[in-house]
Length: 339
Image (cartoon, rainbow, N blue to C red; front, side, top):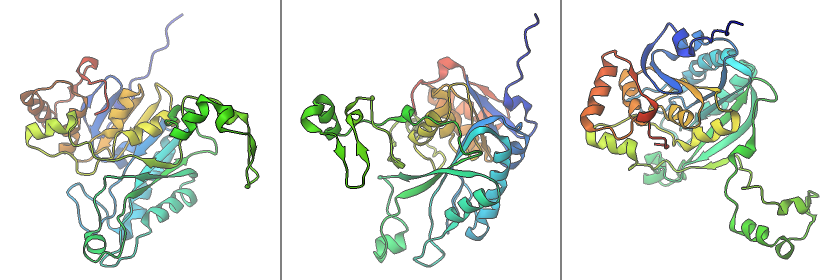
Protein backbone atom coordinates (compact mmCIF):
# COMPACT_ATOMS: atom_id res chain seq x y z
CA UNK A 1 0.00 0.00 0.00
CA UNK A 2 1.36 3.43 -0.94
CA UNK A 3 1.86 5.72 2.02
CA UNK A 4 -0.43 8.72 2.00
CA UNK A 5 1.49 11.86 1.15
CA UNK A 6 1.40 14.40 3.96
CA UNK A 7 0.29 17.92 3.00
CA UNK A 8 2.94 20.62 3.27
CA UNK A 9 3.02 22.81 6.38
CA UNK A 10 0.36 25.51 6.32
CA UNK A 11 2.89 28.33 5.98
CA UNK A 12 4.15 26.83 2.69
CA UNK A 13 0.65 27.12 1.28
CA UNK A 14 0.52 30.88 1.87
CA UNK A 15 1.61 32.93 -1.12
CA UNK A 16 1.47 36.29 0.67
CA UNK A 17 3.94 37.59 3.22
CA UNK A 18 7.63 36.96 3.84
CA UNK A 19 8.85 33.95 5.80
CA UNK A 20 11.08 35.21 8.63
CA UNK A 21 11.94 32.06 10.55
CA UNK A 22 10.77 28.57 11.33
CA UNK A 23 11.12 26.44 14.46
CA UNK A 24 10.36 22.82 15.28
CA UNK A 25 6.62 23.51 15.39
CA UNK A 26 5.92 26.85 13.77
CA UNK A 27 6.67 29.75 11.48
CA UNK A 28 6.75 33.53 11.71
CA UNK A 29 5.65 35.51 8.65
CA UNK A 30 5.85 39.23 8.00
CA UNK A 31 2.98 40.62 5.97
CA UNK A 32 -0.54 41.97 5.87
CA UNK A 33 -2.61 39.78 8.19
CA UNK A 34 -5.75 40.33 6.14
CA UNK A 35 -4.06 38.81 3.11
CA UNK A 36 -2.53 35.97 5.13
CA UNK A 37 -5.78 35.13 6.94
CA UNK A 38 -7.63 35.01 3.63
CA UNK A 39 -5.24 32.30 2.42
CA UNK A 40 -5.65 29.99 5.40
CA UNK A 41 -7.60 26.86 4.42
CA UNK A 42 -11.18 26.71 5.66
CA UNK A 43 -11.66 24.71 8.88
CA UNK A 44 -7.90 24.47 9.46
CA UNK A 45 -7.20 26.42 12.66
CA UNK A 46 -7.83 25.08 16.16
CA UNK A 47 -7.21 28.32 18.04
CA UNK A 48 -6.56 31.98 17.35
CA UNK A 49 -4.96 33.86 20.27
CA UNK A 50 -4.21 37.51 19.66
CA UNK A 51 -4.08 41.01 21.06
CA UNK A 52 -4.84 43.72 18.49
CA UNK A 53 -3.54 47.28 18.77
CA UNK A 54 -5.86 49.18 21.09
CA UNK A 55 -7.62 52.40 19.95
CA UNK A 56 -5.59 54.68 22.22
CA UNK A 57 -5.83 58.44 22.00
CA UNK A 58 -2.10 58.91 21.49
CA UNK A 59 -0.57 57.18 18.48
CA UNK A 60 1.92 54.44 19.33
CA UNK A 61 5.01 53.35 17.43
CA UNK A 62 3.46 49.95 16.70
CA UNK A 63 0.28 51.44 15.22
CA UNK A 64 -3.21 51.71 16.65
CA UNK A 65 -6.61 52.55 15.23
CA UNK A 66 -8.93 55.49 15.93
CA UNK A 67 -11.78 54.64 18.27
CA UNK A 68 -14.53 55.51 15.78
CA UNK A 69 -13.16 53.16 13.13
CA UNK A 70 -11.96 50.42 15.46
CA UNK A 71 -14.88 48.00 15.26
CA UNK A 72 -15.05 48.09 11.46
CA UNK A 73 -11.29 47.66 11.19
CA UNK A 74 -11.13 44.74 13.64
CA UNK A 75 -14.20 43.09 12.14
CA UNK A 76 -12.31 42.42 8.90
CA UNK A 77 -9.91 40.15 10.77
CA UNK A 78 -12.69 38.50 12.80
CA UNK A 79 -14.59 37.51 9.66
CA UNK A 80 -11.56 35.88 8.02
CA UNK A 81 -10.61 34.12 11.26
CA UNK A 82 -14.12 32.66 11.49
CA UNK A 83 -13.80 31.21 7.99
CA UNK A 84 -10.51 29.51 8.89
CA UNK A 85 -11.62 28.08 12.25
CA UNK A 86 -12.53 24.45 12.69
CA UNK A 87 -16.05 23.85 14.07
CA UNK A 88 -14.35 22.92 17.36
CA UNK A 89 -12.06 25.95 17.27
CA UNK A 90 -11.92 29.18 19.26
CA UNK A 91 -10.85 32.79 18.94
CA UNK A 92 -9.37 34.37 22.09
CA UNK A 93 -8.86 38.11 21.78
CA UNK A 94 -7.38 40.42 24.41
CA UNK A 95 -8.71 43.98 24.11
CA UNK A 96 -7.73 46.67 26.58
CA UNK A 97 -9.85 49.65 27.53
CA UNK A 98 -9.42 53.32 26.73
CA UNK A 99 -10.89 56.72 27.57
CA UNK A 100 -12.65 59.04 25.16
CA UNK A 101 -10.66 62.00 23.89
CA UNK A 102 -10.17 64.70 26.54
CA UNK A 103 -12.96 63.22 28.69
CA UNK A 104 -12.84 61.06 31.84
CA UNK A 105 -15.40 58.76 30.21
CA UNK A 106 -14.66 55.25 29.00
CA UNK A 107 -14.80 54.13 25.39
CA UNK A 108 -17.07 51.18 24.66
CA UNK A 109 -15.00 49.89 21.75
CA UNK A 110 -14.25 46.44 23.21
CA UNK A 111 -17.95 45.83 23.95
CA UNK A 112 -19.06 47.06 20.54
CA UNK A 113 -16.46 44.76 18.98
CA UNK A 114 -17.83 41.82 20.95
CA UNK A 115 -21.41 42.52 19.87
CA UNK A 116 -20.27 42.83 16.25
CA UNK A 117 -18.42 39.51 16.46
CA UNK A 118 -21.59 37.77 17.65
CA UNK A 119 -24.27 39.61 15.66
CA UNK A 120 -22.43 40.10 12.38
CA UNK A 121 -19.76 37.43 12.18
CA UNK A 122 -21.61 34.49 13.76
CA UNK A 123 -19.36 33.87 16.75
CA UNK A 124 -20.66 32.59 20.08
CA UNK A 125 -19.38 34.12 23.31
CA UNK A 126 -18.15 31.01 25.13
CA UNK A 127 -17.01 33.05 28.14
CA UNK A 128 -15.64 36.45 29.07
CA UNK A 129 -12.31 36.64 30.92
CA UNK A 130 -10.60 39.53 32.68
CA UNK A 131 -6.83 39.77 32.79
CA UNK A 132 -5.68 41.61 35.92
CA UNK A 133 -2.19 43.01 35.41
CA UNK A 134 -1.09 43.88 38.95
CA UNK A 135 2.11 45.51 37.69
CA UNK A 136 0.41 47.91 35.27
CA UNK A 137 1.39 51.56 35.74
CA UNK A 138 -1.32 54.10 36.69
CA UNK A 139 -3.05 55.45 33.60
CA UNK A 140 -4.32 57.65 32.10
CA UNK A 141 -2.05 60.22 33.76
CA UNK A 142 -4.51 63.11 33.55
CA UNK A 143 -7.38 61.36 35.34
CA UNK A 144 -5.45 59.07 37.70
CA UNK A 145 -2.15 60.76 38.62
CA UNK A 146 -2.90 64.45 38.22
CA UNK A 147 -6.57 65.00 39.01
CA UNK A 148 -7.05 61.74 40.89
CA UNK A 149 -10.66 61.29 39.82
CA UNK A 150 -10.35 57.78 38.38
CA UNK A 151 -8.83 54.50 39.62
CA UNK A 152 -5.92 52.82 37.87
CA UNK A 153 -6.95 50.87 34.78
CA UNK A 154 -5.50 47.40 35.46
CA UNK A 155 -7.90 44.95 33.78
CA UNK A 156 -8.18 43.94 30.13
CA UNK A 157 -11.20 42.19 28.69
CA UNK A 158 -10.41 38.86 27.03
CA UNK A 159 -13.20 37.43 24.90
CA UNK A 160 -13.27 33.67 24.36
CA UNK A 161 -15.32 33.25 21.19
CA UNK A 162 -16.22 30.04 19.40
CA UNK A 163 -17.66 28.92 16.11
CA UNK A 164 -20.17 26.54 17.73
CA UNK A 165 -21.80 26.05 21.12
CA UNK A 166 -19.31 23.40 22.19
CA UNK A 167 -15.74 24.16 21.09
CA UNK A 168 -12.91 21.91 22.24
CA UNK A 169 -12.16 22.78 25.87
CA UNK A 170 -10.90 21.08 29.03
CA UNK A 171 -10.59 23.36 32.05
CA UNK A 172 -8.99 20.59 34.12
CA UNK A 173 -5.79 21.16 32.12
CA UNK A 174 -5.38 24.60 33.71
CA UNK A 175 -6.01 23.89 37.37
CA UNK A 176 -4.54 26.39 39.82
CA UNK A 177 -2.91 25.76 43.24
CA UNK A 178 -5.30 25.19 46.11
CA UNK A 179 -5.77 27.92 48.70
CA UNK A 180 -4.28 27.44 52.16
CA UNK A 181 -7.69 26.66 53.64
CA UNK A 182 -8.37 24.06 50.94
CA UNK A 183 -5.02 22.38 51.58
CA UNK A 184 -5.90 22.08 55.27
CA UNK A 185 -9.28 20.61 54.36
CA UNK A 186 -7.66 18.00 52.13
CA UNK A 187 -5.25 16.99 54.89
CA UNK A 188 -8.14 16.18 57.22
CA UNK A 189 -11.57 16.53 55.54
CA UNK A 190 -13.60 15.29 58.51
CA UNK A 191 -12.08 17.89 60.81
CA UNK A 192 -12.53 20.95 58.63
CA UNK A 193 -15.60 20.15 56.62
CA UNK A 194 -19.15 18.88 57.03
CA UNK A 195 -21.28 18.28 53.90
CA UNK A 196 -24.32 20.55 53.94
CA UNK A 197 -26.65 22.75 51.91
CA UNK A 198 -25.64 26.39 51.48
CA UNK A 199 -28.09 29.31 51.81
CA UNK A 200 -28.02 29.56 48.02
CA UNK A 201 -29.44 25.98 47.94
CA UNK A 202 -26.29 24.69 46.20
CA UNK A 203 -25.48 21.28 47.64
CA UNK A 204 -21.89 20.67 48.73
CA UNK A 205 -21.04 17.01 49.15
CA UNK A 206 -18.08 14.87 50.12
CA UNK A 207 -16.59 15.28 46.65
CA UNK A 208 -15.30 18.68 47.71
CA UNK A 209 -12.84 16.85 49.95
CA UNK A 210 -11.19 15.07 47.01
CA UNK A 211 -7.70 16.14 45.95
CA UNK A 212 -7.88 16.75 42.17
CA UNK A 213 -4.38 18.17 41.91
CA UNK A 214 -5.55 21.77 41.98
CA UNK A 215 -8.60 24.01 41.91
CA UNK A 216 -10.54 24.93 38.80
CA UNK A 217 -9.62 28.44 37.66
CA UNK A 218 -11.91 31.45 37.62
CA UNK A 219 -12.37 33.82 34.71
CA UNK A 220 -10.25 36.44 36.51
CA UNK A 221 -6.69 35.80 35.37
CA UNK A 222 -4.14 37.39 37.70
CA UNK A 223 -0.95 37.63 35.66
CA UNK A 224 1.59 40.43 36.24
CA UNK A 225 3.38 41.65 33.13
CA UNK A 226 6.67 42.54 34.77
CA UNK A 227 9.32 40.13 33.46
CA UNK A 228 12.07 42.68 32.80
CA UNK A 229 15.10 40.51 33.54
CA UNK A 230 14.42 37.23 31.76
CA UNK A 231 16.57 35.92 28.91
CA UNK A 232 14.46 37.68 26.28
CA UNK A 233 14.86 41.11 27.88
CA UNK A 234 18.51 40.59 28.80
CA UNK A 235 19.35 40.04 25.15
CA UNK A 236 17.66 43.30 24.20
CA UNK A 237 19.74 45.08 26.82
CA UNK A 238 22.90 43.58 25.33
CA UNK A 239 21.84 44.77 21.89
CA UNK A 240 20.95 48.24 23.17
CA UNK A 241 17.53 47.84 21.58
CA UNK A 242 13.92 47.67 22.66
CA UNK A 243 11.42 45.06 21.55
CA UNK A 244 7.73 45.45 20.81
CA UNK A 245 6.30 47.87 23.43
CA UNK A 246 2.95 46.08 23.87
CA UNK A 247 3.54 42.51 25.05
CA UNK A 248 1.25 40.32 27.09
CA UNK A 249 2.86 37.79 29.47
CA UNK A 250 3.49 34.34 28.06
CA UNK A 251 1.26 32.91 30.79
CA UNK A 252 -1.81 34.45 29.11
CA UNK A 253 -1.66 32.61 25.76
CA UNK A 254 -0.29 29.54 27.56
CA UNK A 255 -3.48 29.35 29.68
CA UNK A 256 -5.80 29.33 26.66
CA UNK A 257 -3.58 27.09 24.51
CA UNK A 258 -3.53 24.48 27.26
CA UNK A 259 -7.27 24.71 27.90
CA UNK A 260 -8.50 24.82 24.29
CA UNK A 261 -6.08 22.68 22.26
CA UNK A 262 -4.21 19.38 22.21
CA UNK A 263 -0.59 18.71 21.17
CA UNK A 264 -0.29 18.96 17.40
CA UNK A 265 -3.20 21.39 17.01
CA UNK A 266 -2.68 24.62 15.06
CA UNK A 267 -2.52 27.95 16.92
CA UNK A 268 -2.43 31.27 15.02
CA UNK A 269 -1.73 34.85 16.15
CA UNK A 270 -2.45 37.49 13.48
CA UNK A 271 -1.16 40.45 15.55
CA UNK A 272 2.02 38.71 16.65
CA UNK A 273 4.15 41.62 17.88
CA UNK A 274 6.95 39.96 19.86
CA UNK A 275 5.45 36.51 19.17
CA UNK A 276 4.58 35.57 22.74
CA UNK A 277 1.85 33.26 21.43
CA UNK A 278 4.28 31.40 19.17
CA UNK A 279 6.70 30.86 22.04
CA UNK A 280 3.95 29.47 24.28
CA UNK A 281 2.65 27.20 21.51
CA UNK A 282 6.15 25.92 20.77
CA UNK A 283 6.77 24.95 24.38
CA UNK A 284 3.40 23.18 24.58
CA UNK A 285 3.98 21.13 21.42
CA UNK A 286 1.39 22.88 19.26
CA UNK A 287 1.88 23.84 15.64
CA UNK A 288 1.76 27.62 15.25
CA UNK A 289 1.74 30.51 12.80
CA UNK A 290 2.35 34.15 13.66
CA UNK A 291 1.69 37.13 11.40
CA UNK A 292 3.26 40.55 11.95
CA UNK A 293 3.19 43.56 9.61
CA UNK A 294 6.43 45.20 10.80
CA UNK A 295 9.63 43.48 9.62
CA UNK A 296 11.61 44.91 12.54
CA UNK A 297 9.32 43.34 15.14
CA UNK A 298 9.16 40.10 13.13
CA UNK A 299 12.94 39.82 13.10
CA UNK A 300 13.37 40.76 16.76
CA UNK A 301 10.84 38.14 17.85
CA UNK A 302 13.28 35.40 16.78
CA UNK A 303 15.20 36.12 19.99
CA UNK A 304 12.42 34.34 21.89
CA UNK A 305 13.58 31.06 20.36
CA UNK A 306 17.35 31.30 20.78
CA UNK A 307 19.25 29.74 23.67
CA UNK A 308 22.72 30.90 24.65
CA UNK A 309 23.00 33.27 21.71
CA UNK A 310 25.86 35.73 21.82
CA UNK A 311 25.34 39.39 21.00
CA UNK A 312 27.10 39.16 17.59
CA UNK A 313 25.08 36.06 16.69
CA UNK A 314 21.84 37.80 17.61
CA UNK A 315 22.72 40.87 15.58
CA UNK A 316 23.61 38.71 12.57
CA UNK A 317 20.36 36.71 12.84
CA UNK A 318 18.22 39.86 13.03
CA UNK A 319 20.03 41.43 10.09
CA UNK A 320 19.61 38.31 7.96
CA UNK A 321 15.88 38.21 8.60
CA UNK A 322 15.44 41.92 7.88
CA UNK A 323 17.29 41.51 4.59
CA UNK A 324 15.04 38.65 3.51
CA UNK A 325 16.88 35.46 4.49
CA UNK A 326 14.65 33.14 6.53
CA UNK A 327 16.18 31.65 9.67
CA UNK A 328 15.73 27.99 10.61
CA UNK A 329 15.89 27.53 14.37
CA UNK A 330 16.52 23.92 15.36
CA UNK A 331 15.19 22.23 18.48
CA UNK A 332 18.66 22.42 20.07
CA UNK A 333 18.68 26.21 19.69
CA UNK A 334 15.50 26.65 21.70
CA UNK A 335 15.50 27.30 25.40
CA UNK A 336 12.83 24.77 26.33
CA UNK A 337 11.55 27.32 28.80
CA UNK A 338 9.08 30.17 28.66
CA UNK A 339 10.90 33.39 27.87
